[in-house]
Image 1: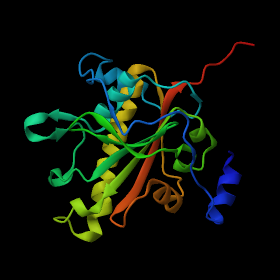
Image 2: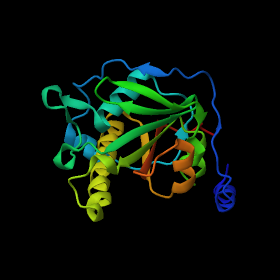
Image 3: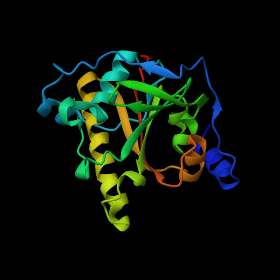
Image 4: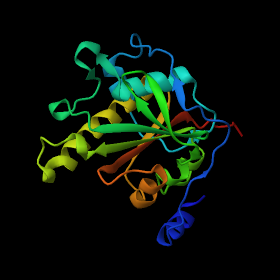
Length: 219
């Protein structure tokens, strides 16, 4: 679906998910994340970039596991410490994963995907046309109910900083593995919040598309 159509549908409140493709398990157990190896940090920083053309081929479960662990996984089990910082360790930002078979919430403690909705929410995650067919769209959602020690006026700022750190972790993972990604803030947040079934204390902050780079066929 092109951008103009999405804008028009958004104006009349009709930007909605599509039926899921395939069956969705209520819980998907991801393989253990591979937390060693990869590209050296300085090389990954040199290779970090935004790309907007994606091969629709699905990512493997191992790739998804590694990607999500990089974004927000547990790296210090005794402290429930994560790979991205969070003020006062509130862990207020949840990572949702929009796949063709359904929308999932990443559960770092168990390294699982928890089914939220058996619908294809990808096209609602942004106005850009490529989000519809890319294999995976991440949505970073703040849960303000976990931030009771933070003044209400500062909660969005704190959560946005945490989401930005997660998104950069995704960028570095993708650079290391030769994947394409782009962070996005051009979102119909009302439509996406409705599609995701979010509550009053939850706020869509950012989205990020991930996939293999679109292959170019020689002429």
